[in-house]
Length: 374
Image (cartoon, rainbow, N blue to C red):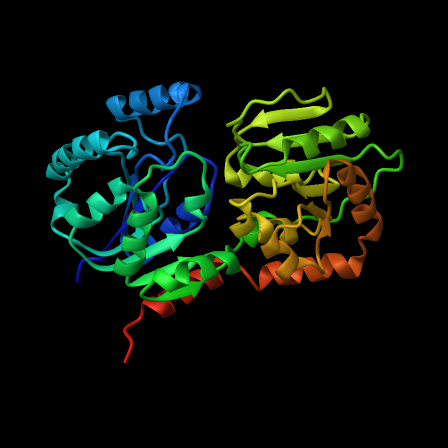
């Protein structure tokens, strides 16, 4: 029997961070290949507020601590000790650090069948130069050039990556518009859903008006509209507002806002089951204009009413299934209206749409795109 091929996933997040496309795709590729999930720092220049996170990561690297969650069969985590790729000095240091790392990873220096890369950082580009590979996929999930405090080299590095990749995947229409002019080959592949984790029985509507509303994901000010969440919570003090996820940007919320912290993806169902309405309360800015929330189809799979910021991708593709709120004062009334407007028919339509957009179907599409072309 011939050995299984190897896929290197270059990720700008840790395996045990909030479950996203990176971990899902790695898990799916592990069915057909040995997956090496390589965690490297993100693209943003760091400040003093990041000191705790940096120290925690450094401690993990020094201790060679394994992830806090079980790994799927066929997935192995590697964590090269490198610096954030934010300036020329760090780039030079990382060049030497990566050479040292690769000397301990003969499976990478021997070459891999596929690299699935999630970041245009200089560190990722250095890895691409040093790991022989047959095919390169750039899975572009965000408009990285709109992130605050990016290094000056990032625009040129991403253009070089787009020109180099055999295939670029993008998750939204706006990303397609932004990246297609520079890409060799580009396909839009929206996020999918692990639908079976989110199918729920209908929840009876509260008779006393004391609603439970829920958002899950990381809490970061460039992504989320903190003012909208706070205004809604203060306008309806009898509501229970649950924000599940790691707090990247601290905020003083009113007492009826609960912050249970990051939860394993498979446990999110327990929190969603308590909710009457789900929230997608994104900030509307240059960065989020290219965002399709990774949790969109998951939320639809629950059959719960959903209230969202009118992000272009959501308005274009999901207007029939979401209630939109524009401005902080609009959120509480929109939640109430979404609950009133929910019917068995609309609930069934949400679930049907989610079931037609699973991660299984997305992975099948990726394998088709990677198949040899005549």
